[in-house]
Image 1 (cartoon, rainbow, N blue to C red):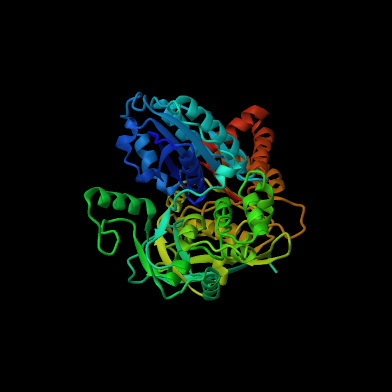
Image 2 (spheres, helix red, strand yellow; image 1 turned 90 degrees about the vertical axis):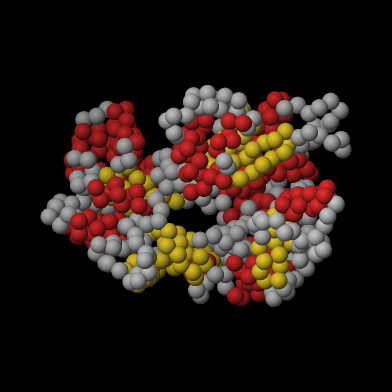
Amino acid sequence: MQEVDKTRLLILYGSQTGNAQDVAERVAREARLLLFAPSIMPMDAYPLQHLPDEKLVVLVTATTGQGDPPDNMRKFWRMLLRKNLPGDLLAGLQYAVFGLGDSGYVKYNVAAKKLDRRLAALGAEPLLERGLGDDQHPSGYEASLDPWLQQLWAVLRQRCPLPPGVQQPVLDEAALLQLGPPKYKRVTAADHFQDTRHIEFDLQGSGFDYQPGDLLAVFPRTPAADVEAALLRLGLDGDAWLRVEPAEQQQQQQQQQQDNGTQHANGSSSAAGAVCEATARAIVQGVLDLSGCSPRRYLFQVLSHFVSNAMQQKRLQYFATAEGRDDLYRYNQRERRSLLEVLQDFSSAAPPLERLLEAAPLLSPRQFSLASSPAAHPGRAAILVAVVAWATPTKRLRKGLLTSCPSADFYYRQEWGQLMQQQALQQQHGLIVAFSRHSPQLDQQQLLDMLQQQQQQQPGNAAASSAADGAGAATEQAAAAAAAAAAVAAAEVRPPGSRVYVTHKLREQGAMVWQLLQQGAWVYVSGSAEKMPAAVVSALEDVAQQHGGLTREAAAKYIRQLELSGRYHVEAWS
């Protein structure tokens, strides 16, 4: 192929759970196939002062919490929001934004929407309309991503044509199934429905300090039996020492050595970089998520290149295409198939470890809100941990990774909960709390501990009643805490089989709910993202019409204003 002066394409991502990073890496792989020169990194890792010099940028971001940007995007976002930035700062930049969100949340994909508007306000030109992936879609965010990428490549090639004589690569399924250079290269030898537990920590002498709503991150340890099974399946000697470093870095150093006519005697790199030296067992146990998260589509593409059975290869290739997306969902995500199970199902696949490090899910911390108040329980911190065990649609029994692992490493991390604590404890006009029966005990306990903190700080400020029906211990505790902490909980934990929902309670107690809203109450909603958030909004709009005398349009605007002013919070999940 004729040597081409490739157009640089910067790809930046903000990712909380890894999905946005996975999308960004897919953009980079396809860009490389189409003869662009992609450069990919988290937004916070990019030196923002160089952004005005870029020509083409693709930005991928998820939305977290109450419409917040991901952790590795926050510094980038704060700098973009500086008021002293000129309106034509990014006049020479062309960009595209893709967002990942969940339409069950009120602030659906708000991080991507805000990023798109801010870039345009600074003079940048959008290449195409922003793409918005929705986890509520049966095929997830990829249902929007696939057609959006097709439009992106068409626009980019129109604006950046190849030189005469260079044929445009075809981005068909055969091309997408090809593997580019590895991302990493190994350079050494080859009765209540939920059981919830209370765990308490003694912080005396630790130096740790926290506020209600802060997080404790737990690094799980993959069960030893799964680690040994994976080592056997991959043909690895668990005691062998391995050295892993980014392949791109190694290739650059080798090229520099050739240009300089020098080479290290042992062929290894001496330059500083992201290098890992550990035993194979330590890497498999501490890096790969063998037993927790389900793999993404790219893993099946990678496995298809290292499989000896023709039928298995055909199936893997099918899973890696857009045509096989729905069948992959039924096999993989819906069944919560683990990496180890996939490797066992496709028994003839023999991927090298460096390819798994590139394509497999990596072990990440599990975050828990601290369920205690330092004012009420000085020197102690507690979390509530649910024992996660369930049956998949095909009756396969599953357990959460933390439920399965015998031990875990704990570290403290101050997070978004700090904002909740500051806001919730400053208000003095009550709370309206909507819990579904599927709300985690963690969310309920977190609220109670914020109320305990307020009681300690404002012991003389008490009063009000509860709209709870008393159908659960957590609700009764909420009623008692609310009466002592100037908060009213319109809450309900309905028993199994009940047809009475929290929205019924909100309408029944509509007069009190409206009075509280008029006094400045805050609303907290916790439950399933499928229907509950929208149903609660509808119930509150009915309350505003019936007891506030508002029209339907005015009622909708009123509830929207609660959200915009920070008085309406949703914690929901799919």
